[in-house]
Length: 259
Image (cartoon, rainbow, N blue to C red; front, side, top):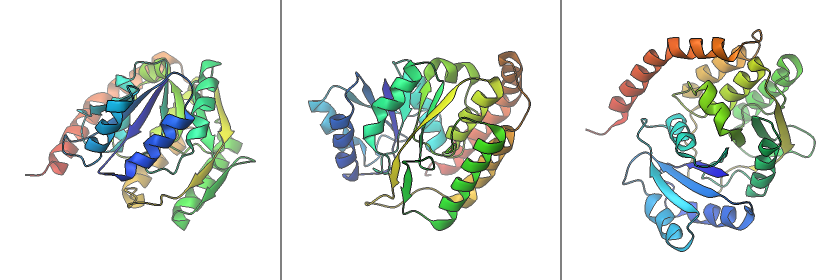
């Protein structure tokens, strides 16, 4: 598998999480540390670990700044047929990485680590974010039948062929998880879940901006309730939107690049 970890100035804090991943991931894997700029404070610490463990490599995201572009770039750069996306802050439990990858190997296109199924739990984090994600997960599971009770969680494994087939339209934040879950649902592709315990980060500050990311989450939330699509119909929709999305991504890169 390819484990994709988007980073943004995690500094020395990434070391503990990387060490846990390298200890807990037992299947053959490459660990991609995806950073937006060469001077990201995460890079020297990750490269030092890479010197001693060839599974780790740092990759410079050239798709534009932000977590969505970093995840897009990481999945495109993945060499394995399974890509597992996990965060650099230590909130996700690396013991679930192998199990998520095995689900994809068995045939699902999206395997979700679920905080809201029996055996799962969310510890800490902003109250509004917790309430909103739980409500979204529950309603999507009950009414849209998306196959997981935690569609908004970023900690997921994907069939990389499926991702490249349907494309990633997200350009803002961490809404890729719900986008690909919604697309799998609309195409009738299998989605599965396993329980996980999510712990709020212990070091550093979260870069999740609810006000900025919420509109994108809502867009994909409502998309999940649509009628069944074929791959051709989805591809036509993607082709119609891609030029506008590329312009948005370029404009955002200009806005966020220091003068």
